[in-house]
Image 1: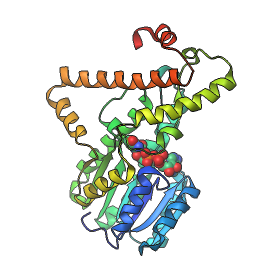
Image 2: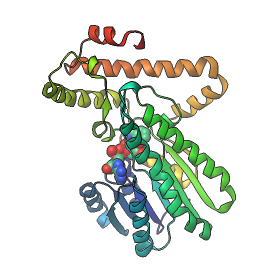
Image 3: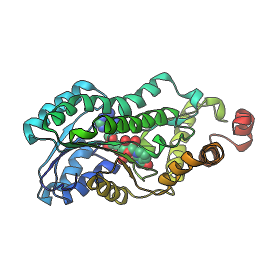
Image 4: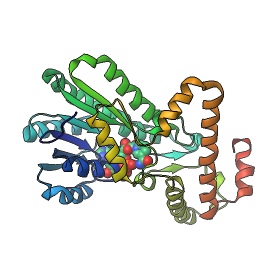
Amino acid sequence: MKILKDKNCLLTGAGSGIGRSLAIGLAKEGMNLFLADIDIKNLEKVKEEILDMGVKVYIRKCDVSKFEEINEMANDFYQKFGELDLLINNAGTAGGGFVDAIELDEWKRVLDVNLWSIIYSIKVFLPKMLERGSGHIVNTGSGAGIIGLAYHPHYVASKFAVVGLTEALYSELYNTGIIFSVICPIRVRTNIGRSSPIDFDPQLFTVTDQEEIKKKFENFKECFAVEYFKAGVEPAFAAKKYIKGIKKNRLYIFDKRILRLALLIKGIAFKRGWKAIIRKQRKEDYAAIETCLIKSGLSTKEHLKNTLGNRI
Ligand SMILES: NC(=O)c1ccc[n+]([C@@H]2O[C@H](COP(=O)([O-])OP(=O)(O)OC[C@H]3O[C@@H](n4cnc5c(N)ncnc54)[C@H](O)[C@@H]3O)[C@@H](O)[C@H]2O)c1
């Protein structure tokens, strides 16, 4: 979508992080904004930041993992804004841990928020866009939708699906006038790490008292959020890149060149280069987990080695 001024955008997950920065960036471009999030208090703060930028701003609470809520939000949107020019399905959650410690409910939660929300959104908003023969749908995927990162199997599964779904829609609806993009962030310093569950088998801990585990786990999460995102970028920086990509109608929108390089290596050196990259990534991520489990007092290097054995 080359010109954003005076056009209408519906953006989910606008209360924090990337969504908040996208909202501010799009308002600067002159877009009217219908902002949704499950956290209405944060949305109110974002609205305050945008109010005197001279664009129309409306906020609405919506749990995107529920079809009925997206449907009701759509009715509200069309009543208040009329036409939908840009739909950004950005709301998302993360999750981490070791695959055997992640319960089915947690798999379902992550897939509901990250994948089903986009399926619902497409079901609800696509027909009117097709009727009109215009519109731009942007889904927030992830670098984890391109690289199979260890210790986030449910998140990776949801984001690979979002990337694949966006490509499939781009392909199927190429001549309809609708544009599709997928944003693939990597390590943007937002709230996502702190707000998402991380699941470990309690055997990994040297501590057994439940209260103590709970307290130390908070320290672990804080440590991990810092370690994991230390090479990250700020959301405002990333959002600028995403808006540039939206204006250029790009199918893939990256905030770091490394993902393009990764795709190239996946294509030309799959057997040796790619597998080495994913194994190296696992080592780095394990090192961050280990450091934080030890620093937070939940475990020791020796105990982890004894419990995890050849999985390290
Ligand atoms: N931060 C990163 O490094 C990173 C990397 C890759 C992908 N992403 C993706 O970027 C998107 C934005 O994440 P972020 O990093 O800004 O995180 P964030 O936690 O700061 O923001 C996510 C927002 O989504 C909202 N949300 C969560 N569940 C919701 C639901 N069920 N209904 C409605 N709103 C809901 C949250 O309230 C929050 O405001 C997500 O899709 C995430 O997966 C982020």
